[in-house]
Image (cartoon, rainbow, N blue to C red; front, side):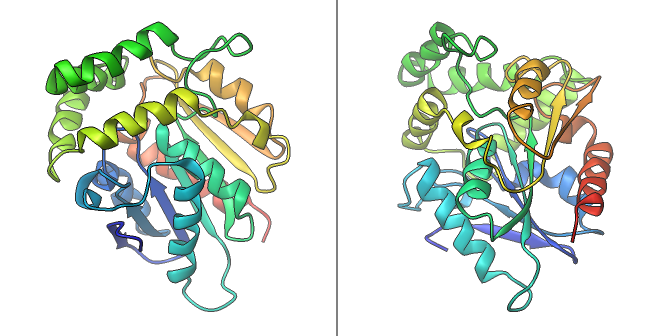
Length: 267
């Protein structure tokens, strides 16, 4: 679909997983393993990432939301089937949120995994990443591609228990499918820097579940609580011993939260 690589596993209601900056759909392997008994899980590689490195689709929120809506239509088990569940991690949360807002007829519920509608702090959003720190990543990316990428992975792993195993998994995973292109990384940073999807939340038509890591150094639970409060039919759950990737350190618990959320939603 528009040059995007995706993988499907399991049986049941359709669940789309959207990964974060620099990664690919394979990062969700532990979570997919835990979810495959309850859902048909689609995990996608975003443009310039993983096996979608050659995709010409721009890394833009609206364009990606529309492309993923087409992907969901193509994988409906039958005409008129129930809409899909959509979960996005970090940068992928922005895309998942846009998908739910732009195509509510295709989405039954939204899961935000360590994700916020605005990643970088602003005058009216103090809970985002420091703009100066964020800008340094972009400036350093061209000078030290590998080192800058690794520093971001360390930020993602910080606070996770166990830390070393999480960092090792992230380091192995980022290159598992060839590594992201420099162009995709810059485009992703531009997206994270400029996107502000808070205006979409008050009119969000689908229920949303916000899963936060208490020890997250990139998208803290305070930011997610504030964002969830803007959306109707929302619920926040915090994993006390998790960092920015709770689905890696607590995949069974995260899967249980998603499964319960889906089970409680009205038909």
